[in-house]
Amino acid sequence: MSCKAINQQLLGIICSVFDAHSAVLFLPEEAGSYSMAASFSLSDKIKKGAVIAPGQGLAGWIIRNREPLLINNFDQKRGVLGYYEGGEESRVRAFMGCPLDRDMGVLCLDSMRTYSFSAKDQKILHQFAQFIVGLAEDRDQRAADGSLSGYYRALQAISMLRTKTPRWTTFIDGFLQIVAEAAGMSTVFLTVRDENGRHYFVEGATRLPVRGASPDQAYPIGNGIIGWVYKNGAPVFSGDRESASSMPLFGKDVVTAPYATLACLPLLVHRRTRGVLVAADERGVPLSDDLKAFLAMATGNLALFLENLYLKNRLTSAAGKE
Image (tube, rainbow, N blue to C red; front, side):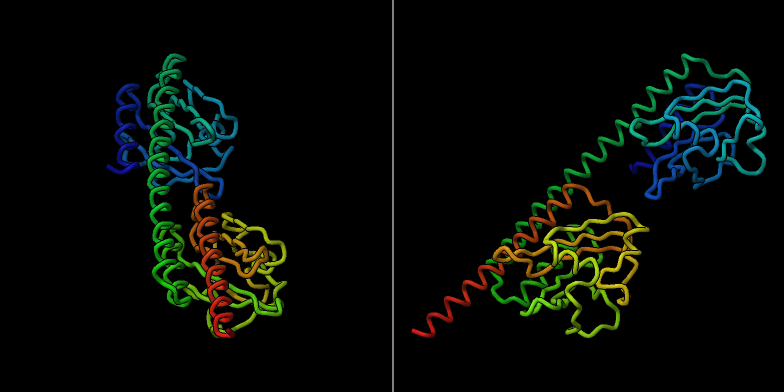
């Protein structure tokens, strides 16, 4: 059963317990607003997909102030609910709401009768809110456990690829695909610097990041976020939709897709940044600590492959001179 279906059933139970007209649950979105994640109502006038901001309406007041609210003689002069349409809100006579812990949202109830809810009811509603938070935490933990298993399997696949695929071109194509699938990113590519350290270029990609660019297109080493990583030898992570899409990845004059998520990691070979691994997506992919750690370990595996390849080439060259 989906999370939404579970919440829907739970709200139906809550409505029954309190003999309420409607129960609605708002959960956070990426942009700082809160959207209606589930609802149960005796009315067909619920505004599906309603979105509120902290401070907007009674539900928004609860979110902003992180305090419960009980109004037993409600009228629209005292505030708005914002989750009804077609004039249904004017019939509401009582309202009760409770914030979820850690700004995870708000649980709201209303009734068509005045003085429908009590202080005791408020405490019981708080217990339901805690139960919803517990369900979400359990779901997130199970998802995290699944992600960790996926990252582990991906690192195993990279290790096997490194030992079974000595050719660089074959290895890098397989490596980038494994990382993209495990990270859930649409685009993963590797840039490498030239011998003079003045330019860098795209060595391999699951999807070309610059539309219409030639495969050997070179970019100045100081340009864009990638250039910054080359210069500073430090990773850059950005999961904010507005800031990520406005930051120039290759430089201000190079057009790329409007990436909402970016992860750029330095590839250190013999203590110098020889390349930058980039994982990007137009969607807002959460950059969890586990995902960042996986990307760092994958980059380390890639650096190890290059170091071994460099050593192998030196040994081959030395053997040829004997």
